[in-house]
Amino acid sequence: MIAASLQVLARALAKREVSSVELTHLYLDRIARHNPQLNAFISVDEGCSLAQARAADERLAKGEGGPLTGIPIAHKDIFCAQGWLTTCGSRMLNNFVSPYDAAVITRFKAAGAVLLGKTNMDEFAMGSSNETSFYGPVRNPWKADCVPGGSSGGSAAAVAAALAPAATGTDTGGSIRQPAALCNLTGMKPTYGVVSRYGMIAFASSLDQAGPLARSAADCALLLNAMAGFDERDSTSVERPGEDYCREIDAAAGDRPLAGLKIGLPVEFFGEGCRPEVMHLVEAAIAEYRKLGAETISVSLPSMQLSVAAYYVIAPAEASSNLARFDGVRYGYRAPEYQDLNDMYSKSRAQGFGAEVKRRILIGTYVLSHGYYDAYYLQAQRIRRLIANDFAKAFGQCDVIIGPTSPSTAFKLGEKAADPVQMYLSDIYTIAVNLAGLPAISLPCGFAGGLPAGLQLIGNYFAETQLLNVAHRYQQVSDWHVQRPAGFD
Image 1 (cartoon, rainbow, N blue to C red):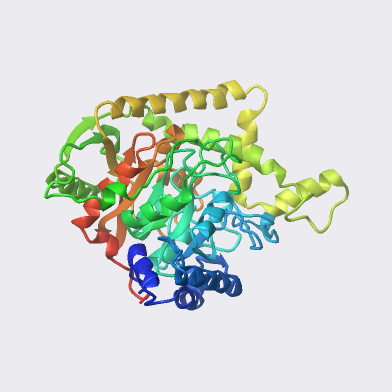
Image 2: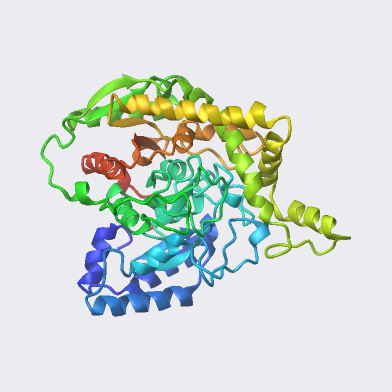
């Protein structure tokens, strides 16, 4: 049962071969057994989860269930959930119990899914290794002394170790795709505005986007069906007709299901910077796509080399503004001892935020300050436009862009903690997608040294259905995505 896809679980629930209560108990027991080793979950509320499971069983008994009714889903602890501790992996919100649900949580509740627990994450989603959490680092199920990737590392580790059948994450510069690659999962970052950010605690508002983490593209499509949709409470939510992201996956396909598809191979993705063993796996996956009927052509993204520099101006600038609300006055952590109001502000923020968050607040405040706004922030926004234009030109020649998700497999815990620049370069292949607001998906493409590697597919705006289908066709002829780490049976 723990290796079953969401579709298989849904059929078993619909046929009453298993109840939602039994399924939820199964995963709660696995969390109790394995979470002390992995540290993937911050909060679990057995009573609340089982109450939702009982309600789901009642819906199923009446024949009112949908594709996700009764299925337990883990949620990154960046989504507010009513009555649940919602911490963002920070001491600053260590005592914050949300009085309302995020739009994503509301949508999963409407679908009848069970909230299994809140997963660990880099503090305020700032990190690429899940080592900056106030609650300690998350460990990779494939190798316990390695990172799972970040910032959605808790969600990725939970699904990889079968502590949950699927999970949500958020992606600001690769925070769904990179942990998916490092944990042998499929993870999708939708087009900016497709999934509501209401109730998703902000890091960088023009870059943040919620998305699914699961074992397969087919499972991600089911999750995205529940997550996506217009929300008037989010000013950045895109109002467009609803879409069935499973429709191309469910369609019949012949021997060459991707005939006519043009895949772009950016020269910037296939130069220096990627480990040879990872690049070998990516090239093998591209060869499989050619067998499926796709045509590959060379394209160029010349401004991509500037993406990391632009991102680490724009994202900290937005973070410095968004995190100004955490001042120790209205909610969250407050320093126990202080002299006056200004002292309370400074001590609460100094004690409540971790080192990486404080580093980014300082950088962001600096680039927005008088005399530096034009030199840094405005220039970074101009580069952002150039990056988007490069993608637009490339998509005039191809349908999908392919390359590595991460330049390496999972690295050791602590290996890059002392060198922020090296840590930031872990997202070199993913950041440009967020700057342009495009959709992208990472899927497993093999193993190097016993650790998984990821293949990234990038699509044009609102091409999620196509991307999911292209990923699914590869997963029909490969079995990387069904491999599971030892010790979590």
